Image (cartoon, helix red, strand yellow):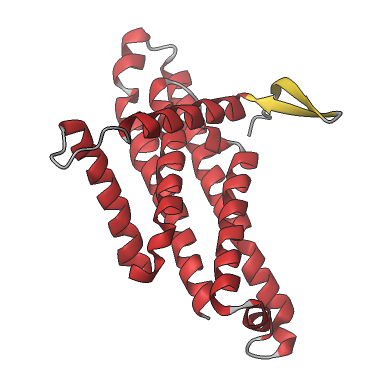
Length: 226
């Protein structure tokens, strides 16, 4: 796996933070999503326009995803799950325009996984109380504490490694295809990679987003109910 080198650095309180191209692309995607949300959320009408119909289809799909998998009692998580769906999918499919997906960077994947981990633990504490939550680490008996800790804290590791590993593999495979076609000719590079892009930048990108989101929803529900 190639090492991601910073393209510039930011000085914050005397500390230099290197910014790689993956972070820059992520920030641009974040800005685009924020602007799109503001624009698409304006002037909503009772009789929807074509644009509003599309927005409502997306919202209804996310609502159904949360309610069907978590239950009506978890509707408060619809904004968070919806944000994950749109944000991760946007980063994964950007390879369609020739930009390597930010999710090939483990730092970004780990950040997303840690946010989900905090949400899972916070919801469990809020729902069952701190005492019952801590008691869960001693279930079914106290000697299980180390294993329960490992089981709980492996979530961000598994989420981040799965997402990063699959997206990195996609970038590598697409790169190998283009390198192999380099000696064939320009026309071959235009046509042959299309199904490769479709599989890795659309199908696989969507699958990896779905797995991340599903595991997040499952853990939010299970940890709070056990």
